[in-house]
Amino acid sequence: MPSLQLPTYDDVAAAARRLEGQAHRTPVLRSRTADALLGAQLFFKCENFQRMGAFKFRGAFNALSQFTPAQRKTGVLAFSSGNHAQAIALSARILGMPAAIVMPLDAPAAKLAATRGYGAEVITYDRFTEDRQAISQRLAQERGTTLIPPYDHPDVLAGQGTAAKELFDEVGELDHLFVCLGGGGLLSGSALAARALSPHCKIYGVEPEAGNDGQQSFQRGEIVHIDTPKTIADGAQTQFLGQYTFAIIRRDVDDIVTASDAQLVQTMRFFAERMKMLVEPTGCLGFAGAQHGGVALQGARVGVIISGGNVDLARFAQLVAL
Ligand SMILES: *Cc1c(COP(=O)(O)O)cnc(C)c1O
Image 1 (cartoon, helix red, strand yellow):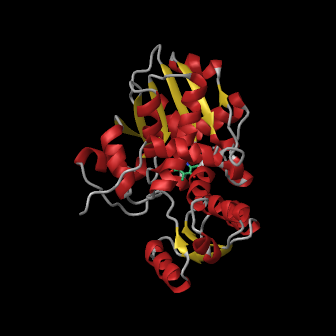
Image 2 (tube, helix red, strand yellow):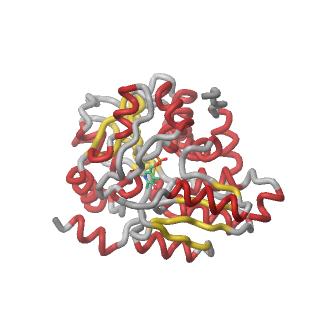
């Protein structure tokens, strides 16, 4: 395989400049209860308050804003189980280009509706029997549009890294940083930011227990593929890491831990009750991993990225009522 040209911290910094005035600079929240629970100082970077409700706006806008005039004319195509779809749809609308999104039939209703609401064309497929990558590539070829994948793209992962950059810019260096892990765009981008801005910070990816392909890949030193995992963390149901994301994760991340669905529900309740925030199951991975991942955090300064807040209210009620 030819060696990849990996993005660097400079690409994260350039993305931050492109996102100025477009993305929200989301708040970093504290909680005495969380601090007491872990015996540490916690800093929550709240991307559930980002535009369209998740960090994915950062990567999507960074990628689309670098399209050539010809690419802008034919527009963008994306495949996504949810938040990337909305992120691409919103970014395309801001930049005035057409967007077509390939989404699973069983994606949360709020995510399908939001994507259509941003003016994108939605094409559905069956997540358990059809290959979204093949469908998307065929469509992109037929239509001449540019395919922007949800995580394995230098501009996407550099954009995602701007959330961690803002966190370090605001609170200074940290001892540990916990980041949700699906395909690894957020984790690899965060790692680029952390290595530059807080070189001694230990970085952890947190995956759903039922879908620990990233953990297996990290341990084996090669990308491991798994079947679509059954977990409530629908934003982390990815089957494998990307070429770019894995190369950076392997080089810069310290470990990958997991959280069970029951721990994610417990964390959703914590955010709602104690911090008055609606966080989607996938967005709870970081804090669940900090609490249950077996990392000693006593007395440390710990960053947690809350990745998103897009969950149907009925679904949220059903999960936290258990
Ligand atoms: C996409 C997503 C993730 C996982 O991000 P990757 O870059 O695929 O690792 C985590 N949380 C939320 C809310 C997401 O939308």
